[in-house]
Amino acid sequence: MTLLEALGADRQWRDLAQGHGGQLGRVVQVDRGECEVVTDDGRIRASSDSQRAQGKVAPVTGDWVMIVPGPEDSPAVGHVLERRTLVVRRDPAEHARPQPLVANAHVVGVVHGLDRRINPARLERFCVVAWQSGAEVAVILAKADLRRHPERDAEKAAALAPGAGVIVTAALRDEGLADVAALLEGNRTLVLLGPSGVGKSTLINALAGTDAQATQQVRAGDAKGRHTTTARRLIPLPGGGSVVDTPGIRTVGPWDAWEGLAAAYAEIDALDHQCRFAEDCWHQGQPGCAVAGKVDADRLRRYLDLAEELADQDFDRARRRR
Image (cartoon, rainbow, N blue to C red; front, side):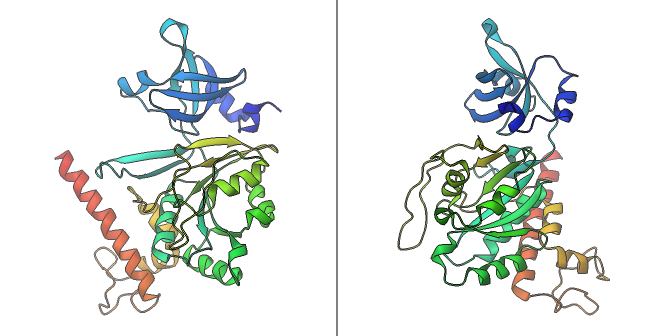
């Protein structure tokens, strides 16, 4: 099996590539104006400046691309193949636009370290972004060896993330790694999302069997981590498949994520469709409301906050178009 096949170069991608000139490759990492790309011939550096300059789709980590001769016959990204999934967040620098993070992941793993209490609002926000990508979603609870009853945290996570698989891990003890590795069977790609210090890089190193990613201690006072991962990087694993480490994200802003919101709050969404005021009800206890009083009040409040945030985004985009 070649490295490109281990990264998921299946028949569908190769057939899709036939309609475009150049050589098929997968983006491992994006730097300013350049990409590190794996092809059948090995790893190369390819320019991506022309994509952005011409207003085309700019490549991100995980993209399948066609490599063509660029200036002075140096490799360049000639075309980004249609994406199967895409993890997107609201750009933290410019809130009025999206920021694509990782393309073509099969599973988005929302990682939470058990050296701290589960933060429901943060976990649910990450799940909204994860579901909106179009990929499968798993909640990965790391550092279980630091918790006396991690099974209780697993139950809480399952309630906060309906439809997502929950995996409890302790990477330094090799616990739960087989369950994470099972997500990668068939040369699939797993992207890890979560704040700094939750254990993403340690988990990747355990899966890779080597120090593929740098790690640091978290602060003892509040368990907050330092940014050790500085770029989104796709890392091939020995048994096939790949995992994408991402820089820590303290707070994640969903972007145009109505489908992700519905999936992350599936039980509320189901009741929402039954409400007699479904078009304009904010479920604050109006007579005939099918939601208020039927679900956890705090979870409903967080759902409504996110819905209002997305509605504000819709309004802002419509205003800008006008």
